[in-house]
Image (spheres, rainbow, N blue to C red):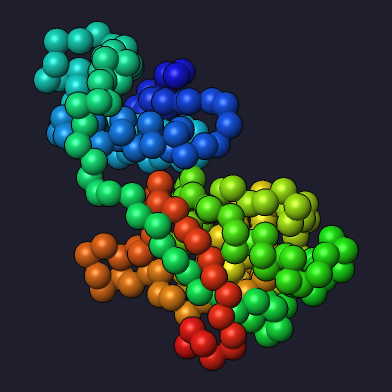
Length: 226
């Protein structure tokens, strides 16, 4: 684990290495420990795939604590964390997501099949067989970045032109899969659509899927998940 400064009011915890469920779990455990400590000088905690940025109020720390370096104080705080003592904020879940593949629901699927020289049934089997884990949240509220895409269906390019992508679209972006939660203008490759609502701003827990969760897709026919 590497800890380094990001400006004068933030510190970054970097696990380096590959994106794995274990790395995500460790970052979540560190975040939970910091939340439990309820440090009034920590203003924001933002985890990504293998890093986590912790912002803090350096001026207030200097004013109220007997320290000369807010960074060194935060570095020691993080390095002394024992993640075994943390209590998970929530249990990780496996969310099963119905998906209609191809056609108007997945306008780029046929192009991908042709490029990969792969039958539709094989592609769908490989896509639904994978156990995806949420390695990062972002782009829009509740949008999950899903890792563990089968290498056989990875396409290393985007669509020729950006287009308006409906909420609920299942997209591929290099070695990541994602599910749009809002209408989006992008050049992502869209392979299918789900009507499972992933984002509801009226709910306290507005996102159905969270960082560290697992996702399994299963195929339904048009109208079968509407």
